[in-house]
Amino acid sequence: MVYRFEGLYREQLWFSTPNLAACFLVMAIMLCIGLFLDFIKQKNSYSQIIAIVWAGAAIVSQLLLVCTYSRGGYVAFAIGLSVLIFMIRSKWLFLFGGCFALFLMLVEKGVNRVGTISEFADGSIRNRLLLWKGAMAMISDNCHTGINSFAKLGGEYAAWFQPLWLDEQYKLMLNDFFTIACAWGIWLSGGILFIIVFIIYWGWQTQRRSKSPLLAGIICGVIVFLVCGIFNNVAFDYVYLFSVFLLILITALVWSTVFAIKNRCWNWRFLWIPAVFVGVFCTVFIFMCRIIRSTFPYHCKNIQIEECHVTIVTPEHKTGTIILVVDEEDNIVKFIREKVRPQVDSGYKVYFATVDNGLNGLNNTKKLLNFAFEDSNDISHTLLMDGMAGKQLFIAAAETLSGKDIEILIYNFPETWPMDALSPVNFVHKIKGNITFIEGKQHPMKLLQDEMTINSIEFSVINEYK
Image 1 (cartoon, one colour):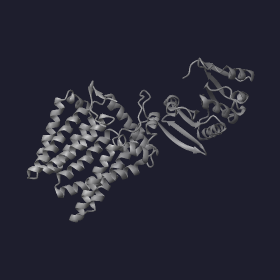
Image 2: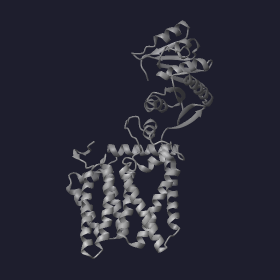
Image 3: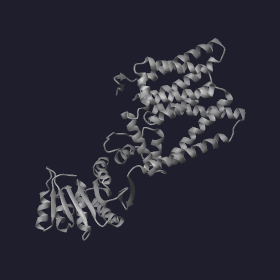
Image 4: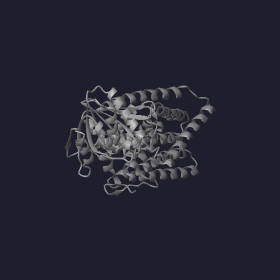
């Protein structure tokens, strides 16, 4: 896929997106600058030539970085160069910063791209912020263990936290830390963060003693990868890119270890300072996730009733209770967005479960009904019968809810079934409640209506599905 910014081609090298290419380039720039500074301080002519080669590689990489039009890459370069200046304080670094600024001005609309970094109304930035808000809510709901699956992250966000007016598809959370915390929980993600922060801090302390520009470039290579990971999933989208990061990280660790052994300069603060930092960061982060979660007007809870998995969605201000089921072969994300969340937004507490079309699904539907009536404090309940699973709910209601105050909304489901025990028309005489047929043009459901008329069961018909 070719990416463009205002009609201009965005450089992506051999990567799938320009953002991944930018991450690779900014790591390469940090390493090339470190190598340049390491060789330039040596006085022999051979080293000077090699230094010029590394400087040229860094400058070419900067030009390619500018041509990616990757805002995350620009931010990562600015932070990486700032850290290098802090660590090394070399006048050469301002030359590289000046080259980057010059390229931004020379490349068509390069300055314009920098200006869009703060435009939160931009669709890409706005949607990313909404995704991160949903990710923080997901982390709050599954703080300790996560949801134990990277594959489900995008669907979980789209189902429960993406605004209904937006229909963007995501696999991951476009942020490496958010993605890991959503999938594995705060303990494991915090542990991974501790290892990286420990290596960075120890490497920095080693660099202060060794004065090595190359080690400084390696440390900044790690840092810029993390910065790019704030705006994209650079650790997940391309194995090669993550392998380069791991190689740089391990190099920094080995360098620091060898230096500590040779100079006997290990200090336990290299461990406890990163540990305190990560502990405070994770504590504040979880607190912020709780605050973000409170901005959503409902909460979800999943429980297991034997083999029946029930989801309970409770709005902030409840006006009633709705019970419904979904067929296991349906698109669950679409079902939640189209059938569950509109009801919750209207103030209804919703109980639902995923069931199959057989006897096992019918038994699970009965368990759902019994549990919902026991768990809810409402006097009356609304049963929404829709799709293939609607027949299961119809039969379960006929067999288990005699004498209960219920409202039944029937939209569309098979009126007959090859197996008598699963054929709704055979249970019409048992159904009780305030029954309303919501007719679609293609599914009038006349057979059920005729049977109800024969059995003197009152019902009403409306002609649109709400």
